[in-house]
Length: 248
Length: 287
Image (spheres, each protein chain N blue to C red):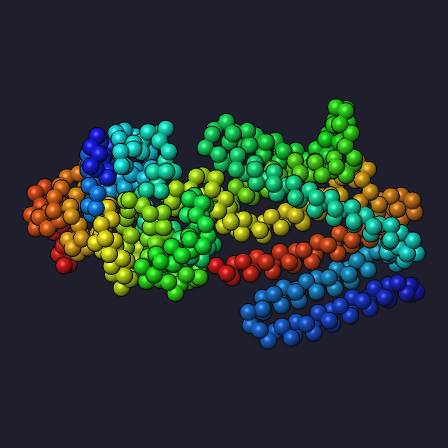
């Protein structure tokens, strides 16, 4: 077990019934690295990401986050999750709370911060994602792009060391995608460790330090995004990138 | 030719008056297109009542109608008994409100056990819900009151009623709570858990506030049902509205007190039903 790694995944396997979705994943993510994960749907990208913060239970193998094994039943998953922020495709904001309360809920209830501090910090985070003026609006009154930016602020409120992004722009109208990607680019520039499942190849190329291509539950290719885009080796990756990059 | 008794004249007069009023209301409402369906329905109903009244008056001898009115709508008996009967409403409302408090607490607890990750807990809750819902409430009331008496626990009739209604209605409301909780998208629980909140914190601050809002209308309907079912507690001798109505019916050998008891329930339930409908529309408009 290497302590220099933010995340180390060792022979991760995941079965749903008889269907094996992850067939032995080995992966390391260094601090401040931005890892982009691409692949066709059903390849296991999201499942792998969800295993990292314990939303899915691994069927085999180990996942170490800052040296703590997430797959160990004795591990305190709630403490690990405070260190790992996740942003979902479907936003999952709390609809009964205002934007501000969405962001302050976890600090107040989990970390027992005092409300003044929590609110001040939430306002800073909302300012950072450009939504300070929407602090008292309810999620239903925000656009998809705005909701997703609030979701990012909400995750950042717990001061995570690692951020997981699970196809965060896939549910957005095309004109709203960039506002979310811009927030993510800022985060990357500030040195946040990120694992990003995405179909945004432009983003992958610009921000990604490393890219992995997954297919059918295994990592097929791994390397700098530019190299893989221009020179994929496996036939499956050639096929995938030829379809997806033809629009660029 | 038979002479027409005054009661019948009044009956017809009231009927025609009601019909005229109905038509007036309808004409006003006709102006709105989207209510035309309701208007036609109401018109049909009015017509049906008219025809039915006409047919009944042809079939039944006039003295029979007089006897009926004397038995069911007797002013003399009413004036002697109405106050005693309506005082039972205090007991009825107390019984319903006190029970409802316990029902909400117990119902929610059972619902949470019902969806627990521990199989034995789930099984226990499912058995409780099935057994309780599979038995008549009146039987549960009797068993609890007399059964606890034999065990040396002498509950008052009121408290036995509260206990029986709680045990029974908690099973129904647990299912409503469960449906409400399960209607909240699982992404909500995931998002809360991902922020480091434990299961119960996520339930308390994220899932339940949304679930409760969704189940307010069905829970209110259950409360109305509960209010009516308090009448069953009369079987162990609690002097609520129905018990008092029946008591007076026995004393005067006349059904009028029981008709009045029915109206007493309506005084409470009809406004409540309107209120629930109003709330339901308000809640659905917000979405």
